Image (cartoon, rainbow, N blue to C red; front, top):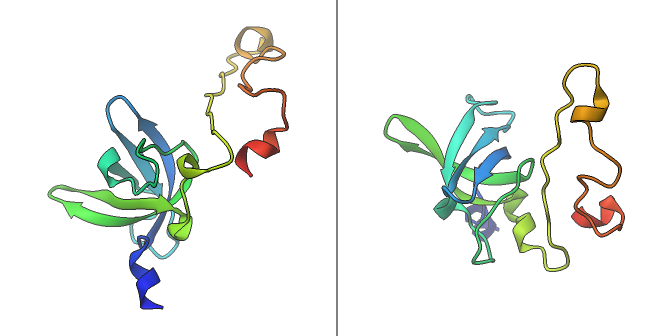
Length: 132
């Protein structure tokens, strides 16, 4: 089926971060056959191919994309869920919420660690249900 070939890009990556306010972020290229494996590639929110009008990707989300040359550096285009599947933002059943982990510094875990009930952002449900 040649129609499916154009639905998603030929590169695979993992979202490192995305700043909603500034509208850009970086994806780590993880395609095994790529010459640029493990490189960090810039993307603009306009490259996100989402059903939802609110274009967003989450840190750690695996995506497919097309790598295009943009003058002095490469950038991502046509960002979709892995192999053309929906992005997490397009999930009809769940709302995804990402909370950055607190760093533990030194030997004192009480100061930098998470306290009971802190950081899960959930409603008491199983964590597995959030991503299924």
